[in-house]
Image (cartoon, rainbow, N blue to C red; front, side):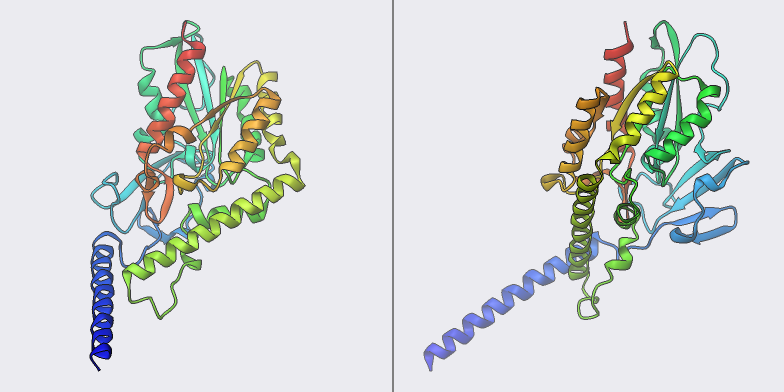
Length: 348
């Protein structure tokens, strides 16, 4: 009987310890993580719509539009008092910046092509890496010319579409240097693009709805969401590598764009701005390695941000827990890398 009582006492202690540990974890989770990770909302005047129903900036073809992306609550204090980030879009769907106008004499013009990372989903105009880079280069001259940077980032585009943007603007802008920002979703595969969208744009919430059995717990729900995002991430990497193996021309559009740029008497550089997720065991490393090999083989200048970004915890670089787009810290990392590259190459 004493043995049974002792075992029973030990069992109660174990159960009590687990309960206390779970209770502490639950308390911390409720203090840190929101109850429901609501997707951002789109606000244009009096129009308020959820993320999935909002128009893309490219839908504003012939007007200047000012709209906001608003979130449940501020993550790192980078949003305004209403937890919003304001975006100003000029005709064509580009972010506010240097007007799309013929280049003046005595100007060294840098044109940056890219997707939502370059457009700057969730960050203010002055936080964009192109804006921060402009500030860093203030008063500097390249080839004895004033420096001008134009941001042609458009959300949800791939390299083929960025090539179209360049061809549509090159005669007007006449750039001296074109920088192409590249991200994992820049593959001509609808399956890859869809999985990428699930991760980077928060639609993974549709897949990460926890079972009713654990929905009451903030701690278990948060764990379920992280598990789901990791699963999607691994699927994305596997599919992308399979895509690359079966269709080795997936990087071909980069080479085509580089040739178009050089044929227009401009320099070309590729900026790898990778996914900001799980740096400790980075799932996209094989994709980055494949691209770096492609750059070496094709003699394309490549600026890889991953080593610098990995110095930060991934979550400190996000716009919001539901939005893994780069915040102003990540944009600053990009601006610093480009500043170093440009000064080494053009400042004499």
